[in-house]
Length: 471
View 1 (cartoon, rainbow, N blue to C red):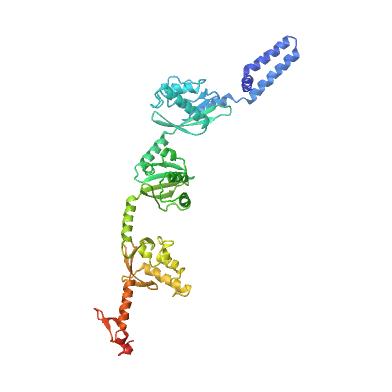
View 2 (view 1 turned 180 degrees about the vertical axis):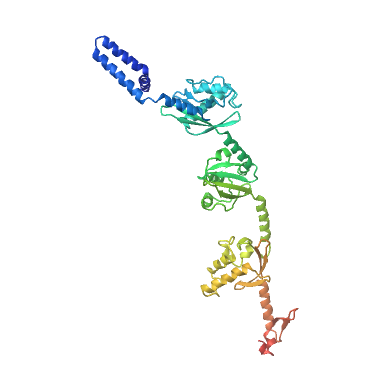
């Protein structure tokens, strides 16, 4: 049926068919059948009028071809059998060494062989077998990936080829010179490759668009070719499966972390994020929103910094006193376990990133500070705590955080406006002092200890008996 339809379309589209019908009509008139002859003549006339009415104006086609010839865009039109129907001069622009450029009516394969023979195919295609395989791949790509751009480099210039299927089963190939854009892309790639940190560009749908060499080195198990075009979530799942994130004991923990990160990327980009890989490296990533809704990320190797931080943490964990470092904003940056011993409830949620006021308010829910009976009194305490943190005393302060436990705090300002608190547990000292005081009170004689400055440090009750007014 298809063959018959094609035959009929060619036959009825031919002007010669109209002439044959008209001649047949004249023959019938001469043979003595004027009615039949007149009918065929009328049919030929109507047919000719219809073709004149609906056939495109040849001048329009000429003007269209002339307009295309004036552009830098190369266009080649193929029929359903992959034979060249028409092409513009710009289509042959890259192939200056081709002597015969008249390929109208010839097959796509013939045109590719001529290009190959002129030396325009890559050096890797040395043999005929490689060439034939390449031709087969190109033909499959043209047919299956219609409308998907392909990039080719010819004689140092870059071109984008796009294939479009036509209604009659043919194809139109459009070739555009994108050399300037490609060179700008190469310069951009060279610039970001010169960066020490890893760079990645993501589109508005969170798909990877561009990376530099440093990023590839950091995530060596994820090849650039396989990663481009995939979403952040897809790549992170692949990284987890490749063993990049040993800190997550199971998939559920990883999924929870990934959900938080994806939410942060969408709503709060710019907040630094740190990850430790299976190789023991620490990376910090900072994200910035682009004008088109994508993300540009810079990933820095902070392994040395984290190792120094871990050594510092080990050092402060091994001291006998509690240690806490507050940043310039008044929030906890670093502390050791001993610092939280007087307030074990603070270890439930942790204190990193929280201020003194926030910690005191949190402890209130666990029954601390019962001496403040009303909320107004407690809020007044919080005001004093905030002022205390802004202007810490230079003298040590002694507290009884809970009955039977005593601590002495030392406060020191840091160069950047933060504060270091050293907390010493003096419970044993206070108990020894209580035993000493009990012993002194049990003496039958009056006892008084004066300090080096001549002031009273300690005495018992009997010492004041002669002078009850001193009480």
